[in-house]
Length: 452
Image (cartoon, rainbow, N blue to C red):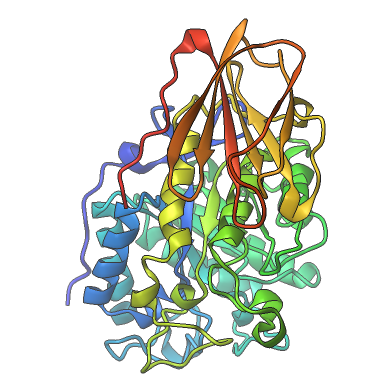
């Protein structure tokens, strides 16, 4: 069967870093909001009809990036895809199986038809080293990593791709770093004609106390933006991770590429701690974005592994991937994007000077602003004492934005001086709110979204 190719003008799909080095933009300079979903096993476990269903759902909900892995985590080298194909001949990265990648072609092209970009992981990290929970096998060296990188880069050249190295691993030593750098070099050669400016690339690590990808690769020319994994526990102060990289020099965009998932065993301990919920994924999204992230990734424990009753489940999935498509947290990501895109976001910056008391963790109050607007997130509905006068305007319009429903409620018009306390309509866990403050002269409208 011939390789399925979809013709997409390169200018329409090329992404670059914004001039202020904080965000991603399209080739024409218009903002690109990275709203990702972790579909790690998409290429490996779903057939074409299932992939169509999944991608259509995510496009309708406003997701813009689908993160998926070519050499997948769940025994991806030895368990064939739905059409009976393995990705490599003899587990050799220099001998890819064209039949397997024809299926990847189909999904990449279908995503493009729907306006989605693929966050393409060339391999899961256990193919470089397994550690206690990876199945491997370990097949990569710097030499064959470059060959494989060039192959996969060339195959998806001029496709809407963001390249994501790392695959949930922290480099242990210089040899691991050399493998990733060689793979990046190969991708740049294949997809970018040797010019790193022609590809968009990042690195997906495991959780780490301070920096993520910036720990090893911040100064590498192929690393366009930094990425964290903040993991699957509720007590992680995700905003501190983003702040760490936001303050690095040279300036690069940063984001959380694997935050707490919906319906995931809390800290991998469902027996004692139960499962995560929609509030957890909302909290991570708003705290990350308001701390300075350029975009955000949602995840669902049942969906990343494309769990079905006839497939092996990892760490106790609660329902099938199809049953999980419309979970509350997934629908509420639509509202996250609507809010961010409702105001000029290429000038948006984190600014905790807007609030008198920030608190921490699940009670955090996190603030971000442009020149003439501010968003302030109260994770548990605690009152917000605002330092007025930081944004422009003699008066501001104030509204409450409900992250659960995407609706706005106008509070009133206030003088933009001194300090003022705003008390959310409800408080406590699962009662998060965003305070919107706008310079009255700008005429900003409430965030608009298509009902998912």
